Image (cartoon, rainbow, N blue to C red; front, side, top):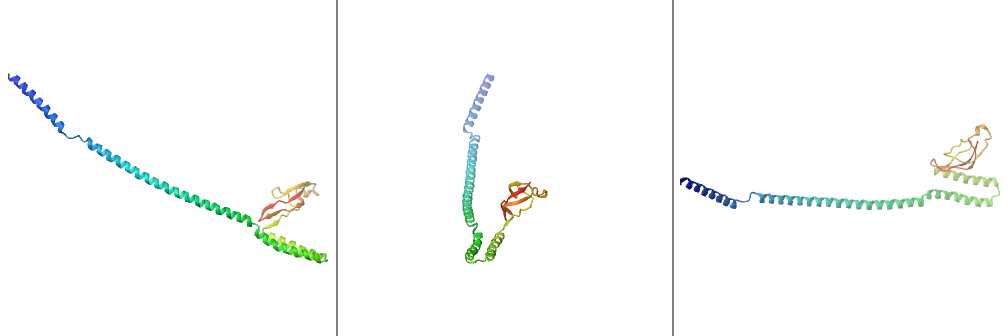
Length: 201
């Protein structure tokens, strides 16, 4: 009987322990998962806020670069417009200086023409004409225009334009310029018209 009673007591104790554990579990607070969820939400909010700030900064930088680009393009268009106008002005007035200088020669020619009609002295007329010729040559030289000496010079394909080849009058004239059909000229040492010459062979 004692053994049976003891067994019953043990079963009651076990049942009571289960009830206590069950009650304790029902009333026990959450294990911290709610705090973890709250922390995750806060972290996610911080990341989103940081992304928004970064996007705003990048958008501001893009706008600044766009404004700089627009200003640069506007300045470049203004520069092109100015340079094109300057080029046009230079082209239109490029020969102005030399033409003004030639007007003096034209005045001398008008006076010489009147003098030729009145003067019967041929030597006097020649002298006046030669003065005009020399004045014109000097004026051209002052502007950098000079004639190219070719007679008896070695033929050079870089400087001369051969329009004919003829037998050389002597062996030493072979490959040299025998005659000049049209003068060549340089402007500040740069050829602006090649002389047309006859070469001995």
